[in-house]
Length: 119
Image (cartoon, rainbow, N blue to C red; front, side):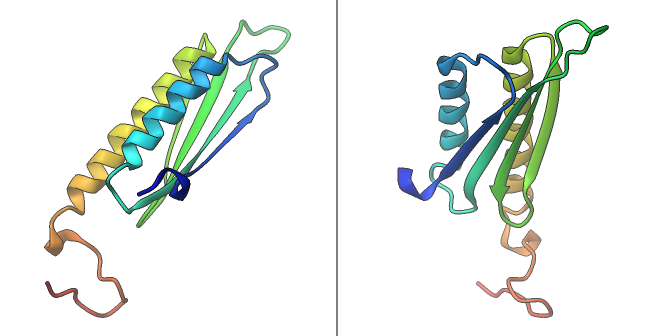
């Protein structure tokens, strides 16, 4: 998979986000997709859940656009870094588990409903 084949989008409602934090998440998600053709992109959404009576709480949502079903992880943390790293960690675990599950030909869903894949 080439670098241009992978679409990555960031959405944030947080006033200031360190560029290095976003870069680290982008690198980890691109590495997760590299060498595989099942993952075509990812989305990262960041928001601050702080209210008048709430201390600083951040939420990060990471979605991996992967076949056969997208993978989503939502994490909350006292810092934006904790929330984002936790969400990326969770997506990495879920994607690896999904790939492990569908790694064997007899465990993959048929490519066309009602038919069997024969290799």
